[in-house]
Image (tube, rainbow, N blue to C red):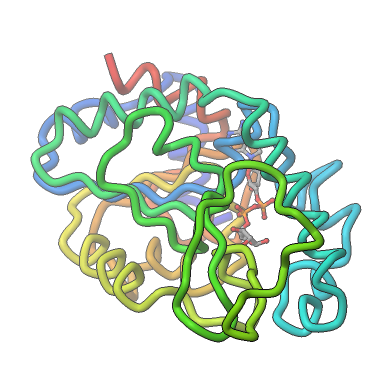
Length: 250
Ligand code: APR
């Protein structure tokens, strides 16, 4: 870890937030990038951590167009389980804190890699769901969409147009929704403060939003562990999201 980040980590850990609260109060434009770590505090598993989804499932078979083509019922079974898990949990204090912070910042954008709708349920308004949302299904052939509120009937996967219903999720190897991605890059570009919360920074293009190639913002990571983004950020606070964000929201 670069000496400057190491010093900042020690300073943050020792003194709490440092001048982060002042930076937030004076920020004109704030962008926040979140990952599954913020939802870990609601009780949902992350992807790569201990007990994470990718520790117990096969990525290529469950979250890829090839996997869906090979066994759509298996993929729907997995997403039905995740949808049920999402409905069984509540937004964490960290989700709620971000919704409160949004009220105080003139220009606030929340770009999330999460599909669990917890930011929306917590009251966040300007939310860019980079990897889709597990609230809708879409047809593989036409542009039909339908709600995905309860378990999807495995006997009703075919759509009348001849296509198949699939979760409205961006799978590995697929492009992110262009309008959402452009809005996220524009927000990162104009931000003067960026918070990166609960992501390992392993997946592109989402992680690139927090790099100096994309943003000139002062970037602060909030994560109990080092990540692929730690060397790139201005400060890395070794803490859980709910240890930091509620303090910033008061
Ligand atoms: N507070 C903050 N961060 C936390 C917490 C917490 N309470 N608990 C865990 N974390 C951190 C972990 O240290 C880790 O760095 O959350 C991160 C979770 O990383 P991943 O499991 O890789 O999840 P994520 O970064 O969201 O994955 C990105 O990859 O699998 C694809 O599309 C999927 O959106 C996902 C993307």
